[in-house]
Image 1 (cartoon, rainbow, N blue to C red):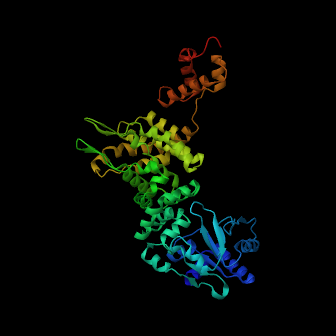
Image 2: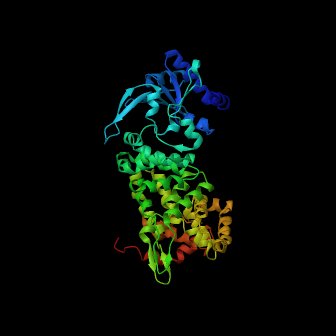
Image 3: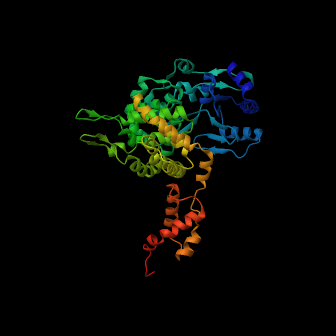
Length: 477
């Protein structure tokens, strides 16, 4: 097969693993294939960092033999599924037995029976992933394509190998994967697949949140994430997987005044962010930055539609969403910060920019100032060019100010020149919240430009407001 031969010359690491797997298969007299996404991406000329191997026999035993050949230990076994993972430091290698699986209606625990490569292809999610290539030396490169997946690759079409009702009943996560592949590959989804998902969408509830979230992140990592989210909305899966996004859609009109469709605006911001950055976290922030708009929407006579406080309320919503979706604490905190601050740079751009206001924003946003500015640029979706030009000049001034490396380094380490031990000594205080309040007051005075950022000015200021803080102490303590 010319595609595999080309790969062997272009990717030495993949070549080493594939040739080694073929040799081990020959030694054990087992047919071995590369399958699934690896073959699909190879045929499409796309990069792939995973190698999926299929063995007509005991895949776990084969994985141990291949790992020994490659000098990698230990092998991670998934005996329930007849698969194993070889933890190569640079590429993920998964080995599976060719098999058929059946499931109880309300369970993801499979009944596994060893089978042939052709039968295994029938249980794949889509025909474009149901293509295999032999890597045995005597048949190297021969394709196994029982469901005409190569044709579907050529016409950019997603369809299941079997009846989609059977495919999705076996693994409801495949419904989300349809949206993911549509976004990743820019493929159309067969109408029969769409209809089946609409019938079976409630079954997504038996899937773990970890697996659901993984698909969301892969959609966000695609070139045009909106394709995936629009499909999830169309088939009703968004209602079950991200209800806070689902309720964003729609436009109300009162007294002849309407507002943007928040869902469509959000997807435009996500796509804009995808054009500006490959960083998934920024795209996720774009997805949730207006999460509280449906709950804060109000119509005010003479003013129109308002969403007051949606930045702060959105920040408060995110811990609950993060807990449900099993997001990491770091990602949760990042999304909360971006949501809270996403209006601030634009607000600065719409009025006279002061050094102190920019300094405050930089201190609060560190170390994600660049990310915040990308999010804010992505959030500009108006088609009114005159409106854009009115504040872009000041917005760019804010951005230029933030690019001052010396100031950024200074602010990254910024803190009160007067340390806590000096405050406790001269105010005769014990450690506690009041010490922090005094330090914050000094820092605010510096950020506002009222005093210089040095010890003498800070100490003098502290003593000038000493009486205000001492009034907060309890004389009976």
